[in-house]
Length: 254
Image (cartoon, rainbow, N blue to C red):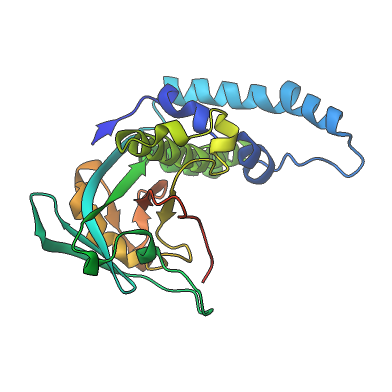
């Protein structure tokens, strides 16, 4: 569990998602690709650079993360975690959905089965950029600074995701799989690495309430994290995940 300087994970910021989908700078129908790139470099990137300087100077983002490793097995459609100090003792169980087709998969398929008698390993992680970014964004909105609100809120969302990617990369490295990462960060952001990171609320692990099992294992309360109404993680700009390193682990719908 630690605080992480913004500069440590800045390279994992997905600028394409930030610029096009969070900030709305999409290529116009009559705009050439060259003109769009020029717009990004001359108009949009300076906005990003100025905002990053401001959030650092005013400590608007407070990036923190916790992660760890647990012995694990698949038991049917359940992912079972065991106590690292006593791998015979079950400490958490996640019931996960399986695709309905005949050869459908489930996350539990990507760890060794319980019947094998051999423990596998699963990573858990949680990251947050803190409550202040949401508070400041709300202040700007209430002060009718709508554009600044949009820029800050979008940056907060994508920096949360960048921090999650940074921690995921660290997990892969500590498990000995960093050499399988693509050297181009843009390709890393498109999952050119071994395994996958599954956030709660998505099809493969849809039960956001299962985070109540994860947070105590990671000491989430020390990061100021809690589950609120609808089992949503607070602060708002936080995310948790199960990390699997099976070479065939990928995102899938159910």
